[in-house]
Length: 114
Ligand code: AMP
Ligand code: ZN
Image 1 (cartoon, protein in one colour):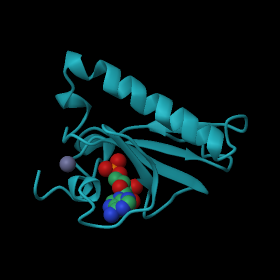
Image 2 (cartoon, protein in one colour; image 1 turned 180 degrees about the vertical axis):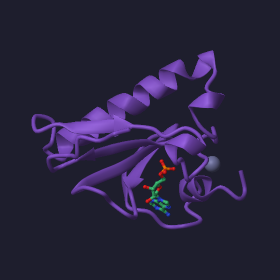
Image 3 (spheres, rainbow, N blue to C red; image 1 turned 135 degrees about the vertical axis):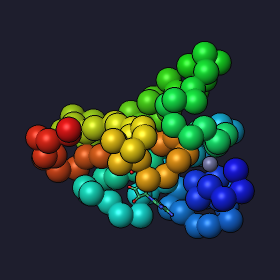
Image 4 (cartoon, rainbow, N blue to C red; image 1 turned 60 degrees about the vertical axis):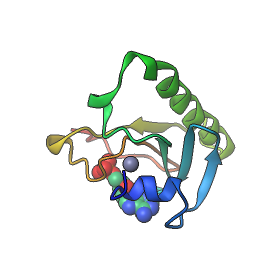
């Protein structure tokens, strides 16, 4: 999608701090981190949100979670703990309409997630 900021990050049209990349997944640091570790894991192909996932994307989304887990391990927060979350739609306050999983950790997180 030409006007999607995360597609532009995938295409290296705008810079990001990449922490992981393969042929179908990119992970980069969130520009406004809410915790010491705040990384976004995205599919390279444009999917607006979980609402657009098809059966064929099951392996891709599973890999995205495993990439998040591997980054958590590399960042040293595997044992202290972390959150993996994704927002979908207006009530969730999704801002960027390109599917992304937030990996958040490195501190004791707040109790409110809703
Ligand atoms: P969400 O509300 O789930 O759509 O979250 C979007 C996230 O993308 C926010 O945490 C933003 O800080 C982050 N973000 C927006 N633009 C950029 C960017 N250019 N580079 C890195 N993170 C970004
Ligand atoms: Zn996109």
